[in-house]
Length: 224
Ligand SMILES: C[S@@+](CC[C@H](N)C(=O)[O-])C[C@H]1O[C@@H](n2cnc3c(N)ncnc32)[C@H](O)[C@@H]1O
Image 1 (cartoon, helix red, strand yellow):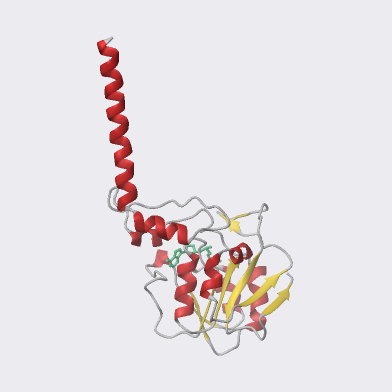
Image 2: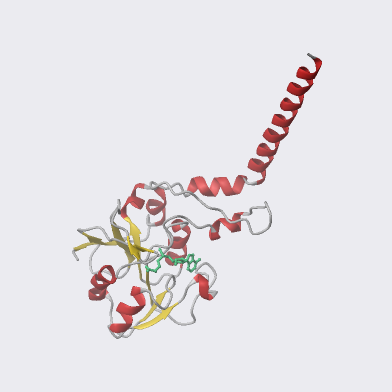
């Protein structure tokens, strides 16, 4: 009987220790949770937060978190409709594009000057900026899109960034574009992105180029 009681006491002690640990974790990462809630998405994505220093997560690390939709690559047919709106003689910065990106291929083949940069080349969009450029064009990662758009807007230069239309359900774009004219290049069909070289035929959302100071009017429809 006594042994059983001791056993229960031990279990209770273990549980309280575990619970206390959880509370401390929440307390330590209050900022992280606030940022996560502020970013709340209409498409649920499991945030896979990298923990570079043991268990300690700081707010900076959320910028480097990777979501499931971040490594989706854009097919060429979804880049081509942009060409109609890209003036010649400008320098196009493609901040999320390795050399094999279709943004690189399509723009370069059309005779545009491009600078493509990518996190894997040590060029983090949040801190890196080429010396000279005129227009940003790309498909950014889905994770932390509020911060990506915040930075794009902060330059005050034109941009076209491909984004899911479902984002318009969130408060972030309404706040970010309250005083900045949002332009949308929309498509009839859904873009089937490539993941690990394979076309994703189960795309459940449609996408548009969220633009600033690039299109001749606020909403333009195209098909591909
Ligand atoms: C949605 S993918 C699109 C890739 C390419 N733009 C395309 O459309 O085919 C976004 C890419 O941005 C990269 N990336 C993520 N965070 C980044 C950052 N902070 N700076 C630059 N590139 C980043 C990802 O590794 C990923 O390859």
